[in-house]
Length: 346
Image (tube, rainbow, N blue to C red; front, side, top):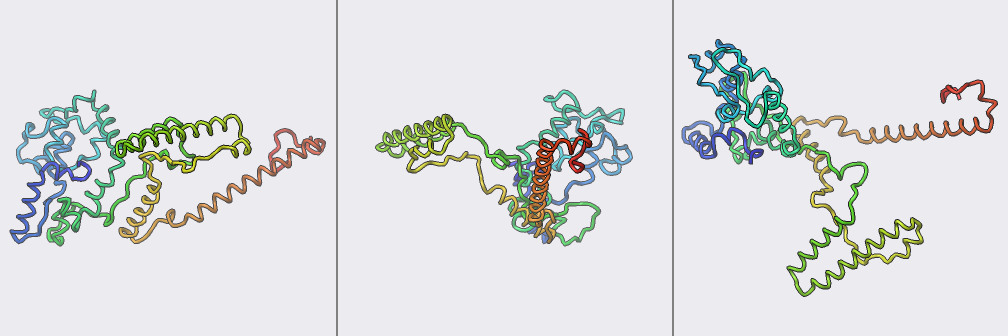
């Protein structure tokens, strides 16, 4: 639920957001859930330990009281409904206070020091678990869930985007994308140049699971299916053994094939993931910027360049082979060139 809800919604709660939305409708104002996004107060509280007291008393509180500011990272995160700023992933100096009466910001107990916290905090942000769901966060903070029915459903209607800009400000929320952001394409075992290798054990285990499921549904056919499973497994083992003994076509031609061979695919395998990623990426560019980058609309040029490079490498190999043959059969013609001559000189 964290990736499908803003931090503002998680902190305030759905009841509070619904109440704010209803008050806007009843009071003749524009209905909204979020009045202000990342206020100046939040920004300076985040950076209280590296900000002068003059700015803090101007934007946060008129009276300087150190006890009014969060003393730990946990308390700071719970205090504000706004997102964490980048400095808490990269800058260790933001934890050290420049004020004598304000202590340094305490890090959680599960880390040793500030450097360890920054390392683990950023590692969590860049982890595969977050990367797989990061597009939901982008949709909420910069994408299509900032307007229309999607924003209402996500309780993410911001006043700055629906008030017709009646209140001008120097900062605020900006909607960058009007279409759903594609999921980040993570490194996959199935999208490489070489197909993944699966052992016979994984094939046998999958077949066993299917036999067990079918026996629960129909007990009368369980025994026959089990026999067929043993025959299929034995056939696969025989085929594997025959391939090890001989690679000739005649040895494999005599093998009696299974009448209905089963193709077992892993549960996490999706052959359309790359195609869906490309379609969503095109849709995002067309709806947001009305144009598609050149590297996405010129795949034929790239393929032609790859083929041309491969052709040039084959030509160079043939030239090297020809020179080698002439050196072997006509060595007297090449003695003056020496051993360090380039391919062009040869």
